[in-house]
Length: 263
Image (cartoon, rainbow, N blue to C red):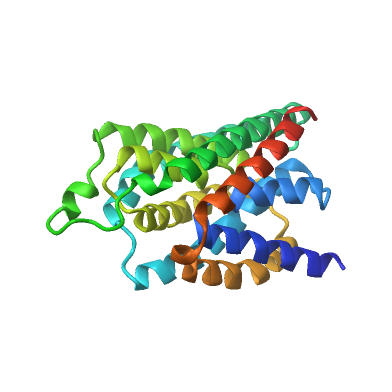
């Protein structure tokens, strides 16, 4: 029975990721902890690889349709991947199953979910402020950040957060991209967010796997549902009432974040 539930949960989260760019860690990690009773360090490690392979499927689809701004992906990755490696080294030194480390993980996860809820709500209210398309001759300018150092700084923060909690590359990443690249159309922001999350979550996930924080059989079942889910979601990304979905998600994430902080 759990096998079918894992597949269904993977499909649901993959669908939301494809539709909105949100949902990898911010939805799957709380689902694993609250509904399946998975220990926080295992939920976080497994979810990182789940997010990597799920978003890899979405990235192939979006790269084929030429929606991804690869310069933006490179800018954020330059800050996030070194920060993720540093965080993983600290976790390996201390030990992920340590009681204090698990408490830190759940508290930080709860705070990250509250930030994600706020970012998701902001995105729901302000999402239409981005242009529908890039004006002719403005492609290079649209992919240029407000300042060269900002993607490195925000990337480092997100890399640390993702490695510690598996949350941050979705709604927080989308909100950061909206602030740093205000001329980028919304579909390209979502596409860049999904694409840059692939190397980040893959590095962080393999790091967690090296310290025994991944449940491989559970991961396989989640991916069996998520890969068709993100494929379907990415196809309907431009035809969905985005504000309704993101408004609902912000409430759900705020509830999960509050519950984790109170554990």
